[in-house]
Length: 492
Ligand code: V55
Ligand code: FE
Image (cartoon, rainbow, N blue to C red):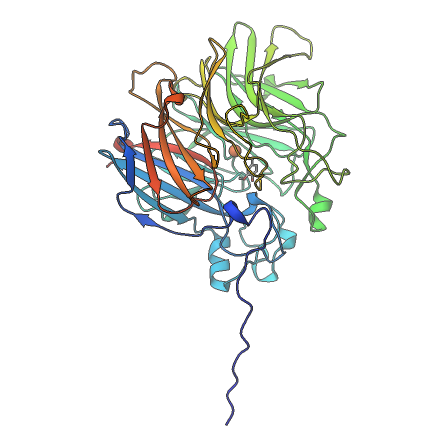
């Protein structure tokens, strides 16, 4: 009698590419570590949880290689209680995650391109829920701009599921960068590619803390492009649109979802919040640039100031140039764009804010939409130390920075020559603390130790170094955006 022994399948292996090797190799650990080691003292006001969301990868891509942005959502929680810190990490259980886990391999193809998927998942939801952990209305969301928000249990990090805000959200997508209006408490949000895989319509939403869409409007952009972030002041909403173009024919041919097409212009849409899209005005940037992330918008008389990070090139580490096979990616710099709305002309002024590359900014959310004196961000300052090895999204930050707009002085936290910083999350020191006086939480990637620290810094004295450094006993894969949820809102 003979027995059929099935052949041994090839072992699972991630490619040795910039997305998947060295310090950016997928981590995939779903951890529960109680009482992390803490150096220093966690401030007493930090009772609650720090969340961050990024892209990990459950399986090597079946198409060979991939971009970093296409990974599976992985949430980190550091729960802080009376100076103690507990860690939890969980993959978001998207339809994609569940289908690939069941198949024990990658089934979904390129970033936002359903034409590259395995036949077994054709037509299935392909969201990755990997960009932003967002706390609003006592709920925790995992956001990715190509899909609806995914609700996550803030205690267990279990995936609850996608939300349509009690049936009030019509679109199929939702931004990863909503803003909370500190005056009304409502969320101001938008969606693009919401009514089709590729669309020129942009939808605006205002959502109550009870989780209901109160207002929806739409307007048409001159082209269908990536719209990753936007700006909200007390009375205006603004979008910087740049030609990271989505091309339906190229997508259907299995190509990249976006590519940088310099035949289009960078434009700004300014929308008065009360009047809505009926009052929309378009401005044309004389320079072809890309907005990466926004800091803040505020008004001074008839002038609207938009503060954001701006790059003079496309984002070639993720998406190609339409014709140049070897384009040079430029780093983002902080700029203030000022629009005198009393002037009927299509003009604005540009003022540089930061003398070196920076990104991933945050302001004190209690004051967003008004002038914020203090701006915090990740930066590359080669006067502090060397550049780190290029990662899958370009050169990593080597410091955290605090720009004081009243003096133009910049204060830095430099974590050492083999360490990178991530987006800082801001928590005020008390409800009555002055604007910008808080604690910054950031994750430090320590290449020399192949692990991560969660650091807590005095926002107004970064140079003093962390007041607390929480040791994570393994490496957290570089993530995108995080938030803080206070214990009283969490119901702890
Ligand atoms: C960005 C990030 C994304 C994405 C599109 O930072 C743009 C920009 C993490 O995913 O899908
Ligand atoms: Fe972002």
